[in-house]
Image (cartoon, rainbow, N blue to C red):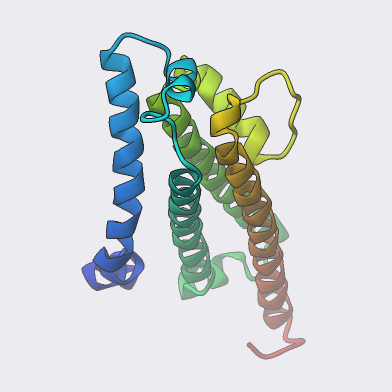
Length: 204
């Protein structure tokens, strides 16, 4: 699959003009968190009491949009990889007449999609952790997971002046859930087409 990992293909998926706007709000968040850590204080109460350090609505929305685009790029990468693999002639020949092999392909694609979702949850967790909103990466990952999946146990919340970030992640999670469902439906439909083609019932 040389075309799948060619330099030209990677440049099209990650154009510099798209990456630059993402880095600005993420860099700002990184600096805010680093400053809070350097002062040896908890970022949440200090930033809320100090108007100069508080995240404004504009910056919170910029961070949410940056993470939305970043997670969409991760999902786009997985979607393209799945589509390319399903149209490889060797894979179609390998699973055309074997139901067990088709099930393995579905399982592999489901795991790939799940892996993408875990990466996306991790990106939000890193943001919370680096900002100092949640102490400890494991706790941050837990909060990110229940927010991304819109479970919302309510045992953890962001401080009031940062809460728009959790709204942004919930929107992100709903979008990625729908996208993931569409991916897996496409995988099953493609494999059914491959099966019917192998049986001579349709032409690909």
